[in-house]
Length: 396
Ligand SMILES: Cc1cc2nc3c(=O)[nH]c(=O)nc-3n(C[C@H](O)[C@H](O)[C@H](O)COP(=O)(O)OP(=O)(O)OC[C@H]3O[C@@H](n4cnc5c(N)ncnc54)[C@H](O)[C@@H]3O)c2cc1C
Image 1: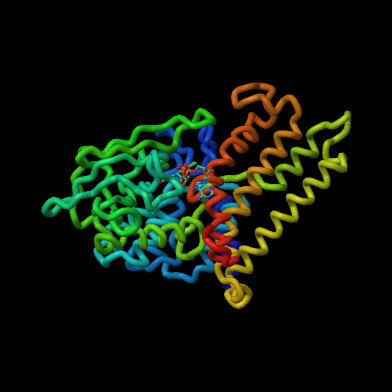
Image 2: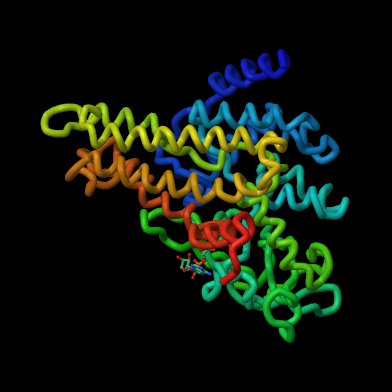
């Protein structure tokens, strides 16, 4: 315990002393909006520095570059990064879903080959699950990977590939058996992105930023050793990946995936905004709404703390983790929308407008807030999952 308290002080000092200087350009809000080389280089260097200081992958095995320490140390680092609002680290897909997956079910060779590069940001990872005609209905995946000797030949297209332009590897779900429909014919691959026939084309977002791509596979040949598990096991492995992505399984390497405005920032905004010539914070309606946000925020934090103590969740072990994504992302969406409503007519201003409140960051935060309510499973899908798995409701 004393050790952890001392460690917390050490971490607090390190992040205060080593925060990278302001880059002089607008940083993205999360790993899903890294859209140009300058942003990418700045964030990758920052991840490297944190890793070199020993503050990433602290609970991953030392043999592969991790710290070999209890998870509690990484939790302290994550909390301190969020508290100090330091920039996020870009390799979220590697650190938080591909990495834990490889450690859980990968071969020894996979672990030796991939884990260190994930931690030190040499190897950025992306995820090839969604397709232009199927996102929520993942079992209907149409991209094909057909075995040809020691290789698979991949054809098709994936979409919304976050970090696709910077990734060295992709976790790919593809159909190896076109005869089988839905779950049975799917397989899972760890795919090198820099091979002929794979092209990631950036897509412009609602905010004007970039960050995700449409990825095309045109007779791309990948080594057969890229297959994870056995042919036909893709669905099971994809579902395991999603438990990491949605936070239902632990084992992530840590680091922030985004820098978010919190309830405290909305309270500050309400203090500075005016309603009928007075601070908006004095308006009973505004106060009422802020108190609701504060209660929700506190509830989310307490739920996260409770989820870490199995004895407190034995009745419905999955409930907190599964509801976490839904609660937190919808909370952020409503909160940023409310922050805009505090700005009155200025809500319509955008980044670059000298009169935009706080440089237009709330506008960008509001538009970006939809991303997490869609990515990793939409709110409707998440609600369905909770209904079925936690509440035991019928599938229909
Ligand atoms: C910012 C961002 C980053 C992303 N990054 C990646 C990435 O890196 N890799 C990747 O593979 N994908 C990524 N995605 C894609 C994401 O996983 C999909 O957008 C998501 O799964 C939804 O799929 P869809 O867009 O095809 O919508 P659809 O599945 O077409 O859904 C459309 C609407 O119908 C609703 N709906 C669908 N089925 C049901 C149902 N059974 N019950 C109730 N409602 C339903 C949905 O909730 C939604 O409102 C990203 C998405 C975003 C927004």
